Amino acid sequence: MPIIAAVGGQPNFDSLVLDIGDGKIRYGVFLNALISLLIVGFVLFLIVKAYNKAKERRAKGPEEVDDVPDDTVLPREIRDELRARPGL
Image 1 (spheres, rainbow, N blue to C red):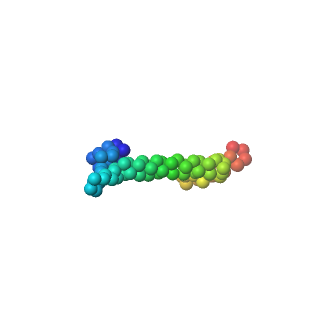
Image 2: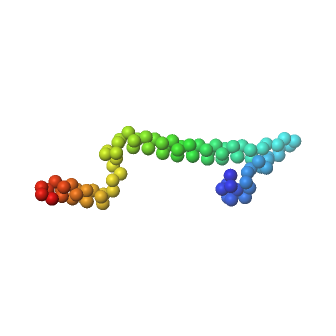
Image 3: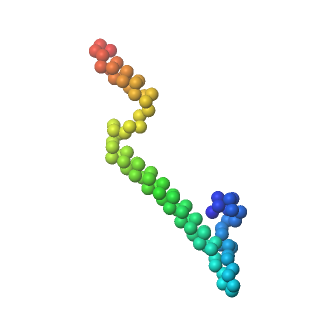
């Protein structure tokens, strides 16, 4: 909640209360719970997304990964051609 405190000015919203007659509605507690739920849910989403991406890369194998930059393809082709020449 420190980031929220920097924006809203309060470290938590527990003190937010709506007085209706003799009753009090503590909507600040609800806001704290909602913000915490959204933050935890977003972090879990990012973790699961990263895990699935790593799992997909592992299933492809090292030779099938298409993350090779274009600037390394041509030197590799030249290297392979030079190795294929007889007498060198």
